[in-house]
Amino acid sequence: MGQFGNLPEGSGRKQVAREIYDGLKGQIASGAYGPGALLPSTRALAAELDVSRTTVTAVYEQLLAEGFLETRQGGKTRVSSALARPVSSVTRRTSRSQPARLSGYGRRIADLPAPPSSPAGKLVADFRYGDLTAADFPTLPWKRALNAAMLRRPQRLRYGDPRGAHELRAALQNYLWRARSLRCDAEQIIVVNGSQQGIDLCARLLLDPADRFVIEDPCYAMARQVFISAGGVPVPVEVDQEGMRTDRLAKIDDARLCYVTPSHQFPLGSVMSAARRQELLAWARRTGATIVEDDYDSEYRYDIRPIEPLQTAGGDEHVIYLGTVSKTLSPMLRLGYLVVPDTLRDAFMRAKQLTDRHTPALEQDALADLVASGAYERHVRKARRRNGERRTALLEALAARLGDSVTVVGADAGLHVVVWFNDIPRRREEALIRKGQSSGLGLYPVTPLYGASAVAYRPDRAGLVVGYAGLDAREIRRGVDGLARVLKSLTGKDR
Ligand SMILES: Cc1ncc(COP(=O)(O)O)c(C=O)c1O
Image (cartoon, rainbow, N blue to C red; front, side):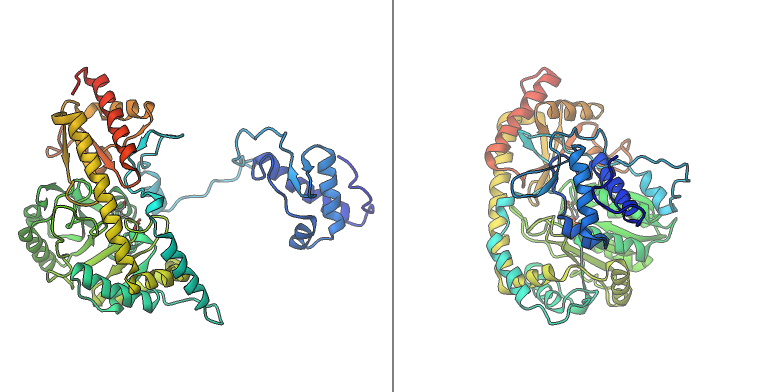
């Protein structure tokens, strides 16, 4: 290696320069600074590392001379674009040190199956459930609300209320009453980073390792996995056209918690009947279990009237209600809310505070504006209309191209349907998905949503969870055309 230009010998500066040189070269080798990446200016890096600018300049010149860096017009220093990308950006373990030991929680997480991933590259149609179309996002109202929130920023920046900003909780309390006939006090609302954090807080506060929890089967896998990670033992209860089979609860006396999606069962789409709601609430009162009511997509009803939440139907002491803007605005915002019984308010507030202090304040303020001004509900009406059109396109295409070779369930509400393939046995579900992927289709199996795949109530057919909110009508039709071709190649039948 060179001598770092004119840096004086023996002053310690050459040693400092060598350390910086080694560090930068390591970053380049690992890919942290890839080919063409912009480096900080010598002034900025010198200030950052608290060394003289001459030292940093000498290092940059050395790396330039060796061909690791280049300067283009404008004098900015970049990693040479001629460098090959490193094979792996993962830093290899060089020492023989012991790896970190996972806690029981960590080990349980490590044992969980990974969620299905989207195939790489541009797809003809990706039916991934949970995605929304970016063009549906209310960009202008959101920008206005964010700007207004910025202008309202107080003089002093400080942590906010762990339960969430009062303005947002008050706006949500009103909204929940208007939209869901839900009566609560703003003090019962806790703003969280999406439903997922709400579910996680419920697990931490209500379950001890080895405690049993009741969960719909099939269910939202991300909820089941949270409860299992907390050490909970699942008690799966089958689902039919009226939602969870609450008659199965009679023999379960020792569960601490029950997670349900009564307004639109995930993934099968049934609505829990009034009789079962009463049975579920009576069970919770009798056993002291807490019901976690996930109302994740109640804004989207097409052929059915809104159903009042369990929380309203006399269950406010035993029900934690969970809502989110992930289906109405964006899953990337990470904004949701819990309505908790009075007796649990303080515990949830403290747990939220210990987890992350509070949900980011600016976005909370913007959402408060949107909800209080009525812009949120105007947007929800628009989103419902657009998603209703996508749903129609999907159902029409499925009927036209696949006819009675499929059974579609759960289309009355929400942003997805479940499609059962009447001529394909369950053991070929994987093959269906792989064939679809090789034709540019993002397809997602229903099997991982069942606790155990070999249960009597699970149809012995291949099934897909088909999300449509991230696609336009043309993509939906193309996707269903592709699916029809895949089906033909698997069954040899035209339909
Ligand atoms: C049943 C259910 N609950 C909640 C959510 C949303 O979670 P979050 O608010 O964390 O984005 C989803 C999203 O896919 C869901 O399917």
